[in-house]
Amino acid sequence: MPHTLPDNPSEAALRRRVAERFREVNGDHPMSAADDAYVNAQFEPLDDLCAARGREAAEARRLMLARRLPLPAYLRSDGAEMVPRDLFDLAERAGGIDRLEAWFTGHWEDARVGRAEWDAYLSGQYVCLRTVTPETIRRKEYLTGAIGAAENSPDAGSADRSARLHALVDELDALEPDFTAYDRLRFGGPTSRDTCVDAVRARHPRAGAASLAR
Image 1: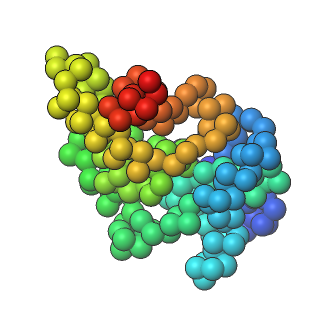
Image 2: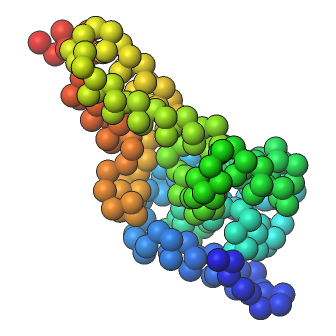
């Protein structure tokens, strides 16, 4: 539900409420120096992004709290709200922030699925994709399911199955970033890269890699 704010909240109050909401969603886990380095390479401080895009950071925070823009992807150890560099791109694609929700959810035929994906998008937790769009969300879902099916297919061990499996894993690899240790804390376990890319490649090495290992 949207979180109410007092009339004309201060910048400090907005920052504090966004941080509180972030921890409500993600839990309160420490960010290490390695985590900070990862998010610095992959994301942008909200204030810097807004300055570069000619937007007001305070308004962006209000939209986050009103469930009209995603929460930050991470809070750096110094408290900086780290967001994707394309944070505003989907709203622009949709024709404006007022049209974003209907445009986004309309990519799913089942309204309940669209609503669930909208909620997930607003959480800021779609750090499993380099670029977050309805298309990449749907493609990731397809690929993770297809990888599991290919691993368990009746033609296990065949060259065709191996080629099909590795093509799926390679495509998912291209969609997903590396993740960082903080992600395994907030998600309470391994990431989709751990389970659907790294572990699958370890169980099913390519023929050339298997030959080199011998």
